[in-house]
Length: 477
Ligand code: HCA
Ligand code: CU
Image (cartoon, rainbow, N blue to C red; front, side, top):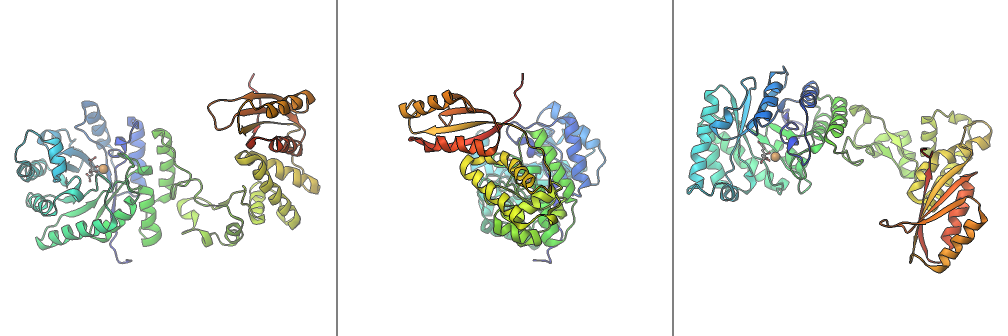
């Protein structure tokens, strides 16, 4: 596996990525993406579909003018008129025409001999683009669902017309790594047999969740140029994530890309595309180097690699520890250190108390306890007398209550009694359209203990199924 030759990574955020529902990039944003990919060491960059409209053509032309080390590609249908929209400044044009009968049936109802048309049009378009001085990719759209014999025939025609590369995309996203090995293996041997100099490109959609695995398998089965997009953008479930692919290359095969730059680009594209990076997204997700369970924390505190495939610094990040319901003392120590607390002067029992109180807070308050972690830390540390942290003097909160049946007399009687006592609980309101039924407003209680008591009282009432507590902040006036 180690002997595989370095692949060339092609990023198509500016073409495939623009086919993500509701995503659009302005010229300035496109320039930033282009330049950052270039600086990160990405080898090929697809800069758009100039045939899509006159406006797009102009944008693509502007991008084409920008000097990059990376090779620029534009995407077109295999039509002479599309090729005419490609700017002179780009080196490559990619021409797509599907050899799959299903596509031909759905797209070309006026043409009788559809396969005959493909066999003629593909070499014609390639020759035309070559005559204009471009290097040319032929994209056999939905290659995996084409009749394999016909796919081979079309590829031979493309080679005869002088094509420089053939892309065998899994356009509809249903291929498995086994399918990839077969199709890429077959076309690789075919190209060898006919002495073709053209390379193979790999483009995989993620509808079934194996785009990256398919891309790696394609590389191992002879592909040279591997496609990805920033944040895996693209039609439907998107395609292989460029950052994840580049990380594989660096971590597993020693091929260099500027990964910290690609991480920053992922954040930038997330902002301008409006598509957030899920916290568990491989490599760029915010949870990816955070250790949570007590046993994990204990080991990862000494050696993060116990629970990570590689050191976070490779991508410019740091390992971290979550507090939360599964926290261990080591996680508490790490959290304190991060907050600038000198932990060597504190006894083990301090960390244990913080750990136990945080765990109980989650049991009692649900997810909302995350906002109480700092208060708990402060309360416990202040007690030691060694550290003094200011805590808000009064706490306000909302308790969401889920009851068996809304309007239940026992529950409402309990509420009235509580309100009459006038101790912290200021309002109880029915809420609709949520999985909770009531919102209890608690104002200015002096400590978390007091809040715990109020919540516990609610939990003991017959018919109360669950509660969740949210600490609230300032009122906007
Ligand atoms: C499409 C085209 C494509 C092309 C891939 C390529 C695909 O949007 O239909 O040129 O390699 O997935 O087939 O993105
Ligand atoms: Cu695609």
